[in-house]
Image 1 (cartoon, protein in one colour):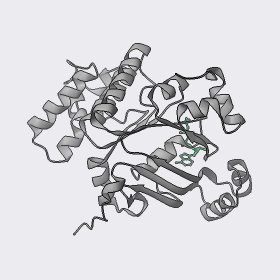
Image 2 (cartoon, helix red, strand yellow):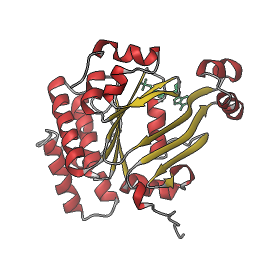
Image 3 (cartoon, protein in one colour):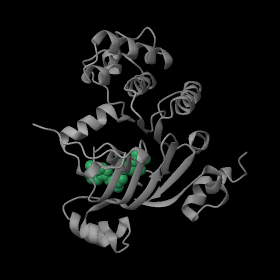
Image 4 (cartoon, helix red, strand yellow):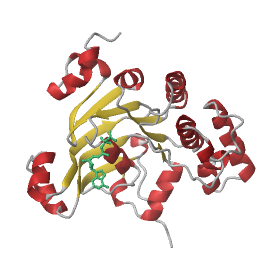
Length: 284
Ligand SMILES: Nc1ncnc2c1ncn2[C@@H]1O[C@H](COP(=O)(O)OP(=O)(O)OP(=O)(O)O)[C@@H](O)[C@H]1O
């Protein structure tokens, strides 16, 4: 079957454009969507339809080659939003443009290609294949892209070394600690060498020293290779250290998007102010 590739727009390369995205989970999606479009809150929609409004009218521009941080309370919609970017979740309404192509309209094969070649993801729950060794996990993208096995494994070994896992190549995921599994997931995403990296609480299981080291590596990767990185975290210090921009979600809606200093100095509302109050001092 012929795969039709929608047009590529060079001026939008590696940016993510989110336009009016809504996501309603549950049996009464249409009713929930209508209420949300009229401005109803997550709680209202739940009370009146029993449906779960995860995202409402989310619009944001994620520039190429930037680290863009997403924060918000548990359940505010962070993971749901990011999973729209590689088509793991289908929007109820709205558009997501990557390289100017609307991800919402891609078919399964096009989505597979997108995940293989353009957008890789590091999951909070690691997402490793238990029956494959550490190095086979790390080399997954290269192997499925059809690279020579020797080359894909050599490349994966380099990334495993960079995340501090040299010597563990032949081990299996269930022989590793949580932090080590998280680093395998990270090595796998980095070895995939895609232009866009989605990271959902990707450092949460790491101890503080390794976490700081991984943050440094991510900044370096972003600076040297110009990767676009979308990074979900609960940790304000991590957000301020990594993010060129920070978006804060509240009940599925965007509370504020801005540079860290703007958010610290001028929080848009009480909710944002609560996030940043303990750091309400000027950033250098
Ligand atoms: N598959 C699903 N079915 C029904 N509701 C869902 C599903 N996935 C997420 N939700 C709901 O969508 C909302 C947003 O969830 P999401 O996981 O995106 O939040 P989050 O901000 O990432 O939270 P956390 O910080 O706890 O990971 C929540 O109310 C959640 O219950």
